[in-house]
Image 1 (cartoon, rainbow, N blue to C red):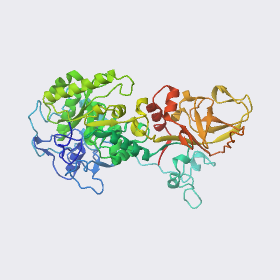
Image 2: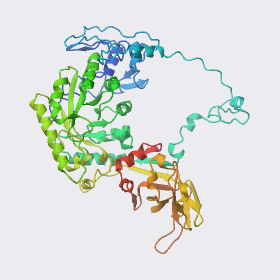
Image 3: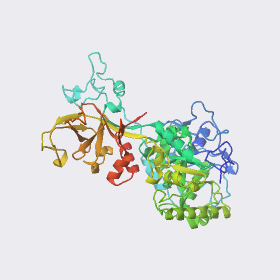
Length: 576
């Protein structure tokens, strides 16, 4: 099931029309320039999510071709992906139906007659459920009219100094409220913004992008001939930063990206990431216009969603690419493996739907026992063969996660999905001897306080730790609100100047403490801590290493959870 028949290389957008795939954003951009939308099989009907001719007051966002690229799809379907100039996300569905902010209609009639070669009228309105049959939108649209935004009232005159409002001491003043004698602000907000996040709070997550590149190369060397690599960047790239990691993985040789939610896909597009993006779940019906506008391919396993997705795409004059999810035994999502042909017969009639790929997910690829894995793999192969025998092209076939990529080459098929291993974390003990992965994340902080605590005095909430004497208790600004789980209290170490030091006392929400033994001997020199000294909680310093695996083992959990806890917290993220 190789993809060598796709022109212009591996695009992953459409096996049906790889050079002609367009999104709702493309249609909006062309309409804004006066070019109508047309399709070989008929004209496009007015869309409920955008106007044919956006005006200055329209809610439809403006799209632009990235600098250095030519407009139109041309030979490369990746080159014309939209970049939001302003406005951010799309307007709400109701507001887009109504039109501009004043509630007036923005839709111009289509210049080509709507096609009537499918069930129902091609001009069914949004209000009577045209895009989502059986749903009456009149009441919802009326509520949007009632909530139509009004012009903002003129701002009241501001006093020259906050003293006029808050008193002579100027308390509660903001940066540009307090004025110098010459009338200039005492504090320049632009200069204040240049203070790095790591100098606002002395704790941060450090991500090594070189390690990401290395791990992509490890994956590519493991791939069977003809297989492609999908970099999974869901959950903000497992806490490592989705946009940066996606760009790094693509530059190192990844072909595809996968996320878990629509917003995660939009984040990539707004970060100027132009590769194919698969959403590894079926989102709500209401998100369909976002899928089309941002060229995000959903996973599909429900007939109602599939038809609504196709109808919405057809009303915009575009295709609706998707990946079909199969349930082969994990019983989380997907069409049951022995019902896939029946499902496709129910939905494949729709002219806009474009089956780009078919996949499943293994529940036990990272387990020592292989029987359940083999059952799932056999079911998946049989389902794919049944599709082919029934005349359905499964598209890009993919099943292998990180563990299966490294352990089972037989299930690489057309593409593998590299997730936790992309970030240098081993998916299971069985893969340690198979791949030299480099962890990309380290967690660091600086000492904010230090004190000698007399013998038998306690530290932190509950005073469960008592000082043995001859120790310095150091405080660092990281706690369980930052992913340093409370369950690690007294059960982990930190690294100071290359030496492991015991974390002591209960980990607090924002801070925690560790002890430095001030006793010295012939076998060990004494470490002298200072305020501002660097402390490593996860990572390597000198010969000492604290691995994410160590914390996961202590907590009886998986490295995925620990990494996401740190990376998706309020701590700053620094790339190197």
